[in-house]
Length: 391
Image (cartoon, rainbow, N blue to C red; front, side, top):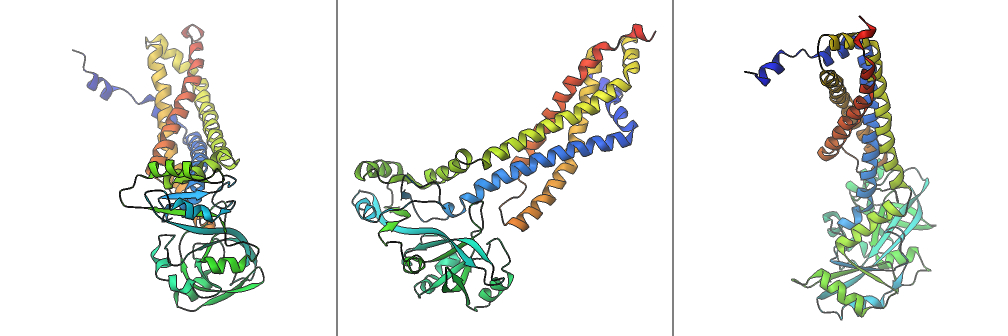
């Protein structure tokens, strides 16, 4: 009786023997696959970091519903709308409170290096914890003092001494648009593709930095709903109640709005997606060259196998065996290299880039598909392995 397990145990691992016979070529092949994997890992990592960093502030907003101008592009480029819309919103059943937030980008002097760089300034009412972070909550009273701000310690740049002084309770002074401000504490949000970091303070201190900005011109409205209120239903009522000079979204819809901007309205998301495709194609070419060279160099042996009675299907399994071995062995150094590069990129850019299980599985599957496709193309050469040419 035919025993498939015993047959597999007796089967000679021809694919592995052929690959390992010339260790130099095997090393070069694995290096090429690892390079393709690293390329895909980095593009997927930066693409994820793009979206994750862009919604860092969104995730910690203390709001069930948000209101903003339809001319706003994303969180860092919001147009203004009349503050009275927030008062009107409170007339809608289910709305417990509506609070303004002011957002703008500004150039400031790095307190440590004295170099000018861009940073995002956010102002809100200190009596309402607009951003849910414990570091901000314990410093709300500080924000009521004139020209006093909190500093994002995850800001991209050289700020080690500034952070050390703030952690030691020492205030730090610097300039924003020729106005002296004091940093009285820190918090952690982080940088993104749109900004290097953040400064937080009260609405009054925000308006002191931007004297041309009217208190009635709000960047973002944060709405808190009454317990048990359905956010979707309240949003529908707000859309009917408010004029069309504002957009109304739930908190989750606002997050998707931000992601959609970076994916559809900028070239960055497309470039990273294109980079993944290019890495995939490069991998196919590399593996095809390896397998094609192997088939050509062992054409006589394959013809001999045919003469001995081995089917074409058996020879195809040898090629696919080589492809899968290359995929798995090439993935290991590729993933290790990607983790090292992720660490370097995270430390250098302050972006939230790290290896995830889902991404590792995605690249592994793409590597297997890449190598199998290459193997399928390379097997066409086996059709010309004719025993008559040998004997």
